[in-house]
Image 1 (cartoon, rainbow, N blue to C red):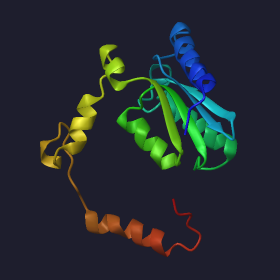
Image 2: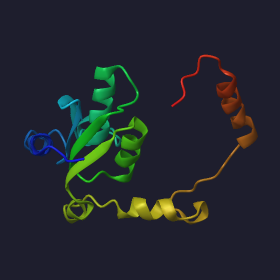
Image 3: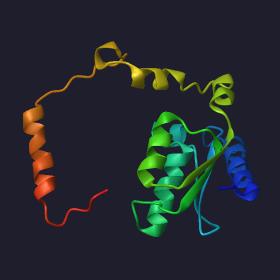
Length: 157
């Protein structure tokens, strides 16, 4: 699948405009379906005090709201920078069919946005991670999954 440079140019323009307007970091994203822009997003981490408000996540939220769906099957995302681990996971959860990016993760690191630590953490055993991660009350927690499995009107995703 080939990307459309026009949509990448739009993502890049959103990223630059976001910086110049003092709204947030240099990241923009465009979600496209059937050759048309469904939604856009910019980095709003500092503006909204939300560490998850990356451009890709914001665009996914906007696109899902526009389509009234939690999945973006058949859609592509154009992002001004290679997605971080959180955004990459969100893109997979949203079921986008393709990712097109401008800047690389190395370019982001050179600008002060280094995700290498996150990639490293994911490969470490729980006991070796920087943040303590411990299972607690697993047997009780499993009751939620049992309720989900038995729920007649659940929507699997």
